[in-house]
Image (cartoon, rainbow, N blue to C red; front, side, top):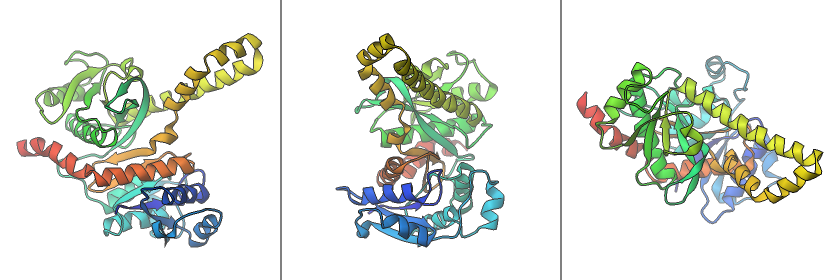
Length: 343
């Protein structure tokens, strides 16, 4: 049985959405043991409004949480018993198998760094995220691919990019049931010599590795097309790309709503295109994907979107449980073994 420590206080939506998501999961055919970490009275009050199976939920008291506007290091040091710290300690001590939080990204990564170890050969961790694509991926035909890093490591060396590729490949295999995901480096050209020195160096190393299905370099136009399953880049660039993709999807939805309200002919056209619009909305709905893994630690860490509702929280916990159940850390270790043997 997989146990997931959920930071119930993190996130823009507050404790109610986290509790509702955990309660809904407890009623499923294959539930997950969820440890709700946070203010005792607040969690109990939120549970009073939910139907849930008490066998699958446990409340772990904590005091306070890291606000989105706070400096994470200072907040964690001043609140040793805050929800994200307590949740991370539960995983560290073996009382839970994975950590999930919709709270402050920096605080989540720092709490994990404080209490977990990095896997052998991992110098920097990576935050991965899914994004919608035109092409389908894996045997399930998933309409999204994986990008990393999107914010944990702003400046990555060639060796960091290689480890990101290994970790992204392992995660795609587990979550998308894709036995041989295609992995590429994001650059300004497809030629092996294009890009920064770190990208060129990573290309040279990945080209010689048998544990990663390396497809070479891809350009920005390949991102929405979905020509590969995993795209690797440094965190600064990845974060900019991810925010742009989120913004484009929201603008498209806003334009469609505005057009529908303004002109009869546009309403008629949009009605005819309604199936396509629904498909676009489904592809760009980050709530169905659960959360973004923080890869590189010896424990599973899933960072849910700050705006996560109950559905997104439930899916984030399910993703965490799946990663534990299918041995994500062990697969990353195996993928990194050739690199570690060279050192």
